[in-house]
Image (cartoon, rainbow, N blue to C red):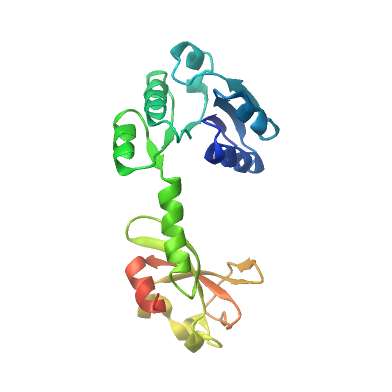
Length: 215
């Protein structure tokens, strides 16, 4: 369980608040708009209406007492940048800021952000991969070269065991789990037999995954 300062309660910020609530974290939410603050009250530990570019207001929050500060401001980059810089000046331990473009990310990283997230870019990448292939059901890019992908079992693999397929040696990918009827089986052994009505979660380089599953 972590203590998190969440700044910016638009659609993206609100979704973060809801998910953090589900994960049982302590969240203080901040926004200038009262309606936005009121909308997240059921999901946060506390909330404040205020200007995140105001040093006096931000100092009153005890920024350095939070494990993570998330700047989810998306509609005003100047506000996002100044808020990020101010958090760093006030001793924030960890700052994660939202970026909409690569140039924004560079400025945020140069002005105090430890990490940046790209909601639109990441969703666009996921959508392109997910719906650009007939046999990919989910996709998590780990870096520019590697990913975890949920794929259908190739017809030639159905009825065979993991040891028979020897996917790590032959295809340079790792089989993490099988999934059937929305239930994961992570207890994969050499004797696990694959069936045509399940999907696979595999880890490997994007190039090897594409080559193996013809995506």
